[in-house]
Length: 105
Image (cartoon, rainbow, N blue to C red; front, side, top):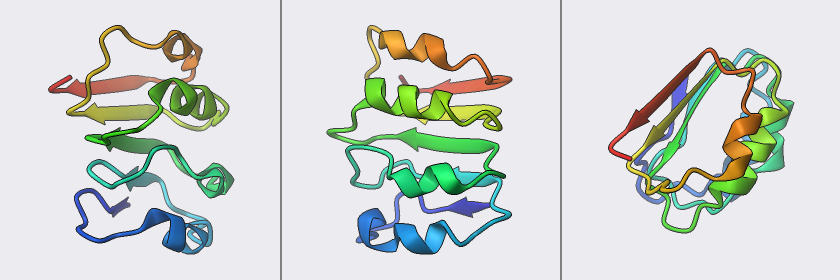
């Protein structure tokens, strides 16, 4: 479990290669970090079951949902403080999810 959410000054682009070395990581919190997309290195985390996103000013949720749909082991998605009205069509691709949390959306 690794929560990077709301880490002031954290640059995911610079640190993402370190994340890809965490072979047993099952939960990753990225809410409140200044990112506009999910880095491709996250998709090498085969044990990742839960991811938290949200409160990103320029995040491309449509593209993010499409990428997350390819993560067959992902079971839970938490979305926090996001304006998702209407939901992007790519949201329908997240068929593998067992639990979805949407907070203040």
